[in-house]
Amino acid sequence: MTSTRKLGIAISILAALMFIIGASVFTYRGNINPVVSKIGMFSFMLWLPTIIVGVILVAVGKKRNKKSDTSK
Image (cartoon, rainbow, N blue to C red; front, side, top):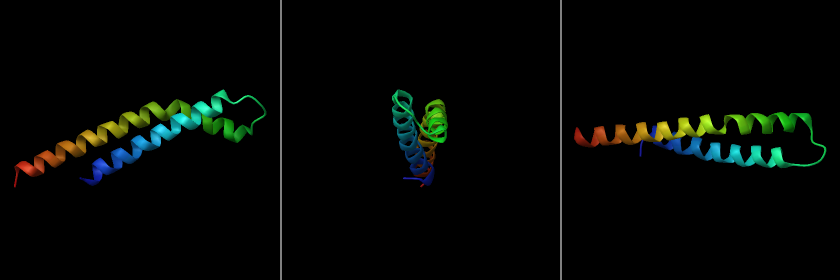
C-alpha cells in the first residue's frame, strides 16, 4: 500500500468526521460558542471537497501500485 493511498484513506476518514461534527453542530438547539459554530459551519461546507480529494488520492495510489507491479 503506497503512502498516497494511506493518505487518501486518512483524508476520507477525516471528511466523514467533518460531516458528523458539522451535522451535529448544525442541528444543535441552544446557545453555542461562536467559534464552535464557525468550526461546524466550515466542517459542513468542506466535507464533500475533502472526501473527493481523499478518493482521488486512493485512486492515484492504487494506479501507482498497479504500475509498479507491472514493471517488476
